Length: 510
Image (cartoon, rainbow, N blue to C red; front, side):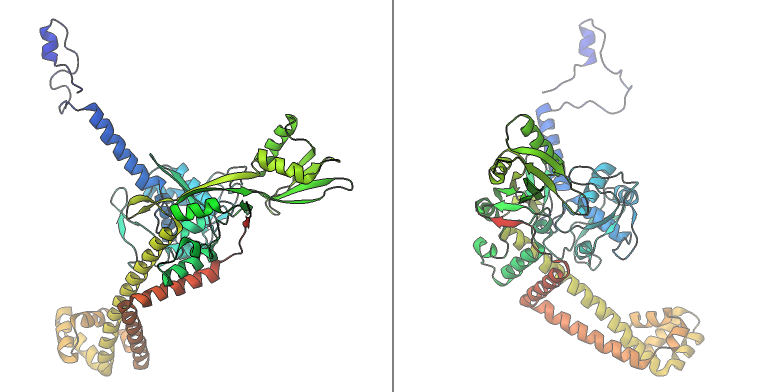
């Protein structure tokens, strides 16, 4: 128990009182248990890091900072067909309105979403120097950004009551607690994060493969991991490479945790008229060519690898990775290559630790559980969107019905409006003479007479018919869970057609 000595007791012993004089400071001193206070404060801090920073939501695969960037950019109108704006402007808007954790963290997150070597399906269309595997990006005042086309599939329909919104940090604005996410972003783009007492590390995957597995799981809820792996044989890294053995991948897909090795892609060819060489075309995820070249040079200098006469790094932003390793005469390139795999980052281990938030709680999820959470989310999104659109169509149909009643005798409507002393009297007369409801009469009164007199009965009848058809279709959809699932599956097919790309990472034998 931490206690403060009373000034009176101190004075009683003949010593000068220590501490503030009575009335010097407002408030009072409270005795607390230090161990309890530290425990509670640390727990509160841990929860804040876990929920507000480090772990992605299993539904949209985004951490709060990424979600806020995408939402704010959509709110700013930074769509793919619009021009780029300075990244500093985006960072300022996000920090000022939604994410008060510092510009560095926001810009780092924005940069990652724009890097084709970090994201399997980039969400930001960057303009300028957004860095490389060996070098960081330019400052935010030099780069420009806008939403990528794939990001529109993440944020679209958020304004149709598809997701819940909550207050921002100061309670003045609202922000989405999750995005509608038209595809399983957590599996497609992966992600990593370190919280307090836990961490997450997700591998990126091929979009078309993940969507195929998702559609299969919708149709077959009891599908096994083995069946799902027929569609998703393994991760698909944006930097390519080759996965060596699938045992660790199977374990990760089944339990949420597993480790496997990824090797560089190489070609053995003649690099000069008399010498053979090893040409590195692809490297393991997050490994840059400079790191590999430095490691090989150090090993050659230490004489731990024999047979290498020269290393030339021809990598650039246009042709991609291209590191030429010249082999001395008398040495077999295959033997040297095995040494390189063993001693350099040309072979690297990737560990999956699939921890994500499910209903606000961190959970370790296998591939089936991840897909199930996403499917449930999309079913909810489609249901809420359909309810919103149905209510909107019904509201518009009510107004169209009122207009059709009014334009039968438009001259009488105008006469009533002109003859009335005020709007309330005109409304009452319209409701009585044309059998309108309050909403219909108000809409007619609020409409400019010029527009009201130019309305076409044929156009209104056509719109009325279309609205009734829409309402009937949405009503039918909402009555059937199977119909909603079919709608989710069809929308996933459309996403796959729009954004699918060939697999980059090969699956090799152990």
